[in-house]
Image: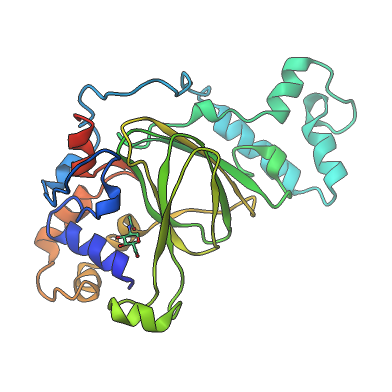
Length: 295
Ligand SMILES: *[C@@H]1O[C@H](CO)[C@@H](O)[C@H](O)[C@H]1NC(C)=O
């Protein structure tokens, strides 16, 4: 386990929100407060009177049957061998593959994906990944896309994409991003911080971009009091996402306990408590940031 994970998980075990690294303080924060508060404050519903400045679109809710319809069409497209055949089905009357669509609205429905349908992912913001299941145009194209709307002090918690490298561009605001690669990356430097791999992070300003290599554990954090938006491309039509802490804590409590080096501290009586305290993937969590932004 990397140092980053150890710190993050140790903080969770300790019931702390986060040990706040200095560079997670919002710009303008004069001093660091290494405060910890009840982890339950990470949960949704703490966004009291959020001081936001607009910059997000009006979000929409897709029709209830939209996901099932997209998925059924994606399955149909998947049965076609060539791209021409797939796109003829996508762009034809009744998806029969014969007569090209002519109605501009129907063409728009087939060609356009609406990130304004991003669901609330906790009080930290919204994220939506377009993949071949919810956007059939992607079937067989080897690429996917995501847009995230991140509230002040919001974080997209550490996760991996098992099947894709991500190319992320900050479209609005500013984000701290970081990643941890696989075991033995900068082995000696990693050993010095008691880790298996050495982590890297940086702050991206508007219109700066970065890469998260396939399989790396990575996060995005908005350290400012203004809203941030990123857009990302992923080189698989089915990139997948695995949230590190949330999935780790689904393991048997003994496995969790031993991994955290806290043998006999976590047991059936308290492991559920930890699981319950883990936030949704988008969370507003850093106390010093929230204090600075009057949240
Ligand atoms: C960013 O990297 C620096 C140097 O390795 C480290 O001290 C700091 O804690 C890291 N911050 C985050 C948010 O990962």
